[in-house]
Length: 256
Image 1 (spheres, rainbow, N blue to C red):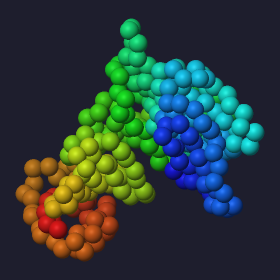
Image 2: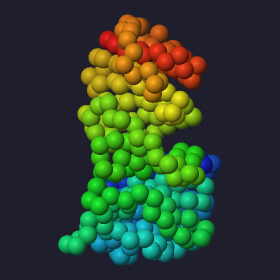
Image 3: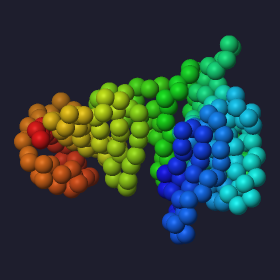
């Protein structure tokens, strides 16, 4: 994972290493056991881990200059899937014991040191993800679908599953891409309210489907088009609000 001019990597759940592009130097930042994830916020390294290992905290902060390590007080047996935006850290915390099973998507303000629970599941979901982009944070807590949580107005949008269970998410200004457990990849427009464009590519790379629609166009007669790979990519990157606003529905099967 890249942070400004630092490439961060975790080795064998035991070492957090950094490669500094500016100096071309490799550095070991932290070593421990049962490490899960790490991100950089400012000059601080935050490490998610199991609370069963020393120090007995599921989240640590490490000063990247002095290497001073401080436990961060967030409840959980294990924390993972860290991401950050500005001075705020986001992640998944799992608490599981004889009396309680809970998975929480949380935020932690690294300046005020305040923690907030954004979403919670009354079960143990060790495969949940968290991914932040702008004012949206994406997660699959509950396993079935990916949905976004708007950090400004606290509204949620569900991206209906079109393939197997989602395992990873990424996006840019216009597109949301979801890696599914069976190896397929689903593409959606980031703004579902404006209409969606979905591309699903299966793991055998034999069939690609693009489905673009407006919420109000359901039930309209569909059109099947067969395009070359170049035509499909041109369609994928050109389709937007103007093309979906007409309320048309396309199902495009591409064999490659």
